Amino acid sequence: MKRRVEDLALLGGPPAFSDPIHVGRPNIGDRRALLRRIDDIIDRRWLTNDGDYVRSFEQRLRELLRVDHCVCFCNGTMALEILVRAAALTGEVIVPAFTFVATAHALRWQRIEPVFCDVDLATHNLDPQRVEELITPRTSAILGVHLWGRPCDRDALASIARRHGLRLFFDAAQAFGCSYKGQMVGGLADAEVFSFHATKVLNTFEGGAVATRDADLAKRLRLMRNFGFAGYDSVVELGTNGKMTEVAAAMGLTGLESLEKFVAVNRRNHRRYQDQLGGLPGVTLGGYPVAERANYQYVIVEVDEAVVGVGRDEIVQALHAENVLARRYFYPGCHRMEPYRSGAARMGRLVNTELLCERVVALPTGMAVGAPEIDVICGLVRLLVENGPEVAQRLRHGRGTLGPGDLS
Image 1 (tube, one colour):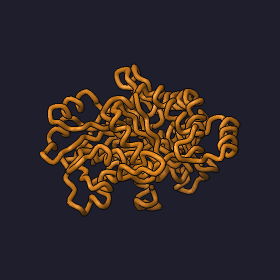
Image 2 (image 1 turned 45 degrees about the horizontal axis):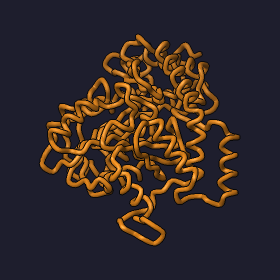
Image 3 (image 1 turned 135 degrees about the horizontal axis):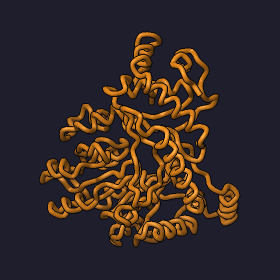
Image 4 (image 1 turned 120 degrees about the vertical axis):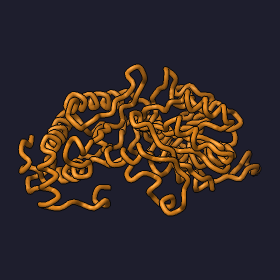
């Protein structure tokens, strides 16, 4: 455990870890069970096109999420794009600026204008009051994001949507297995979109799904993910190729069998971070609702430079030198990325978004991280924070700072 500023790798000391410690490594589950399923897929010679494994995976998802319909896709972004098209959205959709850029891109790709809204400083989710201020006659929907797996204020957003005759959707990419007031995420809106990307708590190598209770919407989603085919040679809808493969579904089924274990490890890790970083001045570790189900997939820390004396970027820079690959999320905000930065995108005052973009950092967790790694990481964070002004001075005037590209 490093005790002195001079021991930091960025100032000449050896790295704390010989190999990189990532924010999230893929959860694999039972490798033998996965390989048995893959062998079965190869023996069947049915690799895609709505096979048995995809149908079984969709059925298991419906049961777990307690929804009537769940349609799987090749990835979460495609799921969102096809949902936007299937729901016949037009004009503008209100989204948070503090989210992964794919949320906005999926709208723009379908010629819908994302309107960037500010978030609540405590929850990091859409601020319902700011949402209502942005509604115009061109608004067709609200698209909230359950950031870090912590659900949006569904009741407030649903009330706004009803009053203004809008559709309500949620990007639930990070919220699989989470709940809101006892109800599973997946059935909280007209539809919710999940990502099963490799870094998510449940992965299918790459994949996604839309959960909904709307039978007509689910029917259109199924048509549109398969070129609009309603039968062997009958095309009744404009579609594309968004299908999930059988091997991806096999990975999803295998992951579901170990989901409780994945969540238990994440919960254990999160609590250890809380124990070691709790009470550290200028550092706030985001929590999860104690009365709800959560996947604990993200360890999110806010760094207040005014209190600590060293900035978030400099802390991340120092951690990277130790082979702790902490991440800035979601820097610099969708509104400051192309094509929105130079495309006159409509947005509200993004005061909280701007603040969070300068404060938030994600620390490593998941199945590949345990107590020994967390203890070292927390020791490094404490060393950096407790010696903030000295660290800042040395980094700024001794070895210099890295550019934004070096912290991606």
